[in-house]
Amino acid sequence: SQQGEEDPQALSIQEGENATMNCSYKTSINNLQWYRQNSGRGLVHLILIRSNEREKHSGRLRVTLDTSKKSSSLLITASRAADTASYFCATDKNDYKLSFGAGTTVTVRA
Amino acid sequence: EPEVTQTPSHQVTQMGQEVILRCVPISNHLYFYWYRQILGQKVEFLVSFYNNEISEKSEIFDDQFSVERPDGSNFTLKIRSTKLEDSAMYFCASTVAEEQYFGPGTRLTVT
Image: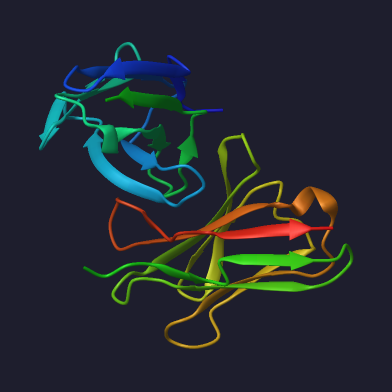
């Protein structure tokens, strides 16, 4: 299985702090995508990073990818209460079928 | 901004009944998917659909499941005879390239 596995499972931070979560996977991938899910809601696409990319930014989000270690990280800078959600990585090995990890639950305290 | 929409948002059905979950993918997208998420668990791939046929399906997608694109806009998932373990959130997704865009989900409760 090439499922991503996130670490930590849960993270609690103060508003304004940065949140970092990691994702590891098992097999070669075409790209890795990060999604956010608010409690009981749908999945919101955050960012995609391709296997030939090492870092990508989008607003307060920074994603890195290390294909030699089969790992990725998502950094949310200057967190806000609205960032409270579960974050999932999902891998695609060019078959358009995403394999999701179990997610990291982030709680941002006001 | 275009969105994937799903109806209904919540469906309650009795075991053994047939259910049809509906999705309207983003209009210029070509690939369509169904995923499910059992409460507290990972999002799991069910099936992908392209050019009016199934591209790939998972072990979960057995003979009780079927998908259809009955017209140019809708994409449906049918479960013929629901079981208790089919209770989950079902997500439709679509893509034209690599990023998959997900709908808000249908929460299916089988009693």
